[in-house]
Length: 244
Ligand SMILES: Nc1ncnc2c1ncn2[C@@H]1O[C@H](COP(=O)(O)OP(=O)(O)OP(=O)(O)O)[C@@H](O)[C@H]1O
Ligand SMILES: [Mg+2]
View 1 (cartoon, protein in one colour):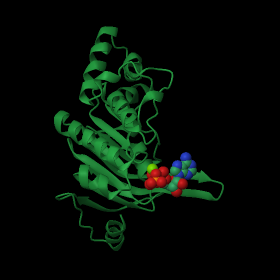
View 2 (tube, rainbow, N blue to C red):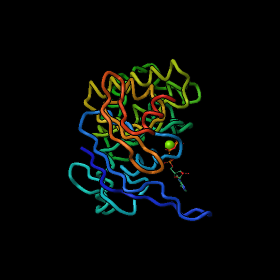
View 3 (tube, helix red, strand yellow):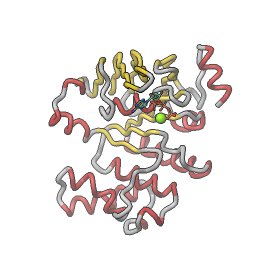
View 4 (tube, rainbow, N blue to C red):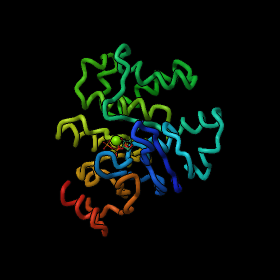
């Protein structure tokens, strides 16, 4: 469904060029949960953000439904971006809007009718199991509830893919399990393809079907997750599994 082919991304820093991604390739099959894993600074977020071109790679291809996003103009890209939802570590909710208004926001921008918006907001609130929070403001919610709102907002416009950047890192362990279960549920019930950047084995065990292991801006190995476990071949991969 998503094919990332040989992308590279270099940041200009005061210390000189920083090669955040070097010749990175991976394939996310439709309907799967795909993990980008590795240590801090390995390039996971940069690779994830390349998929919707929040970070534009300087070379390579990003293929969604066999169309290369890097060749699209601004208008075409807007259409493709509607197929891709995103959630973040710190939720990124609008504090001056209620839960329902947060979820409605991308639908308003996409030009939905008010009645359809209201219907869809109720639907996704049911899906993430917080139907009673529609009129609450983000400040009155727990971290787990905030992430549920962010998930509801990200899927409201029926995206085909959800990008998740460390969506459970800011949550305590029990709530973390809760959000992982919520994402697994959406993957199963809606067939939603999810790409998740994470550095924790728990996320891999509970959620992922396949992963790419990143180190220093490169993919070291692509691995299947079998019964919640990965069996890396590389020395780095073995070390990673042991330590996390
Ligand atoms: N906007 C930026 N400008 C300069 N350097 C950047 C920028 N964004 C990321 N980097 C650098 O690129 C490298 C990869 O960063 P990235 O955020 O992709 O790592 P990560 O694997 O997501 O790490 P973490 O687990 O800490 O989130 C790091 O060395 C980081 O410092
Ligand atoms: Mg990151």
